[in-house]
Image (tube, rainbow, N blue to C red):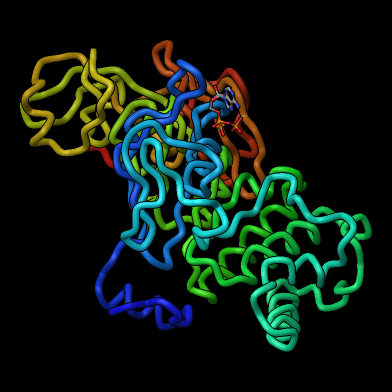
Length: 373
Ligand SMILES: Nc1ncnc2c1ncn2[C@@H]1O[C@H](COP(=O)(O)OP(=O)(O)OP(=O)(O)O)[C@@H](O)[C@H]1O
C-alpha cells in the first residue's frame, strides 16, 4: 500500500496492521575524528511506543539522538524509519525530510516569535485555517491557551518547555525526539511535566525517544529503556525488567539503588551468604553478566559470586538470627533508608517510618531477606 498523502491516523493503522517497526538502528557507529563514541548500536522502536536512552554523562546519548534526527552522520550501520533507510555510511536523508520532531534541552524557541507563531513554524505547508486549528489544538493540549500572544521571554521555564513540545508535535511527526527536555526545571515541576508529556504522547499515539540521565524520568515515561555505557548498549528492556532482572553488573549498579552481598554458589543455583541461602540476581566472580535463573547458575557451582540486594528486599525482623549494625538513617518521607553493616559489608534497607523512628544508630538490629530460600 502506498502511504504517500495518507493522514497520520491512516499511516499509523497501516503500520500497525503490517506490524512494522517505526525506527530501526542496525549496528550503527559514530566517530568524532578518530574517536569512536557510538559503537555497534542496535535497537528498535515500535509505532506509538515511548523509549528512553539512559546513561551517564558522555556515554553518547545525544549523539545517537542527533544521528536519528539527521544532524550527525554515522560511519557504519543503518538507521531506518518506517522501513526506509534514512542514514548509513556516506548517506544522510536531510533533516527536514525525515518527519521527525525534536525538543531540545534549551527548548530553542524563536525569541522574536509569539507562542502561536512558534507553534505555526513547522506548519508552512498548511492553509491558514488549518494552521489556526492546529495552534488552538496544541495550546489546549499543553494547557497554554492564555499565552498564545506572549513571547518566549514572557514565559516561565515550564511554560517554555510546553511550547517547545507543542511546536514539535504540531506537524504530527512520526517520531518525537527529546533531549533532556526537563533538565532545566526544578524537581517538582519536572515530575508534573513528565506525567503530562506521557499523557500527551499516549493521547496522540506518538512514538517518542527521550534522552536522560535521570532514571525517575525514564521510568515515568518509557515502555522500554536502553541503558548505554561508553557508546555501547548494555541492555534494552522494560523498567521492571531492568530493575528486577538486570543482565549486567553495570545495569544493576546504574538503575536503582542496591548493594552486593558475597557468597558461594550451590549446585542448585542459589548462593550461600551471611544472610542465609538466597536466590535472585547473581553475578559469579570474574563475570560482568548477571543471572537470575538457577539453571544458568548451576554451571558456576562452588564458585564465589555476589547477589544484588535492593533496599526493599531487606526487612527488619526482631526475631531474625541475622544481626546488623545500624550506621545511617535517612528520612525520605513515608520511609527511612537505613544503612546496615553486616560483617563489614554495607547494605541498604528501605523501611516504613513507623518501624524505624526509634531505632538508634550504632545499635544492632535483626534483618532478613524477604525471599530467603
Ligand atoms: N562535536 C564534538 N566533537 C568531539 N567530541 C564530541 C562532540 N560532541 C560530543 N563529543 C564527545 O562524544 C562523547 C558523547 O557525547 P554525547 O553528548 O553524545 O554524550 P551524552 O551521553 O549525551 O552526555 P550528556 O548526558 O553529558 O549530555 C563525549 O565523550 C563527548 O565529549
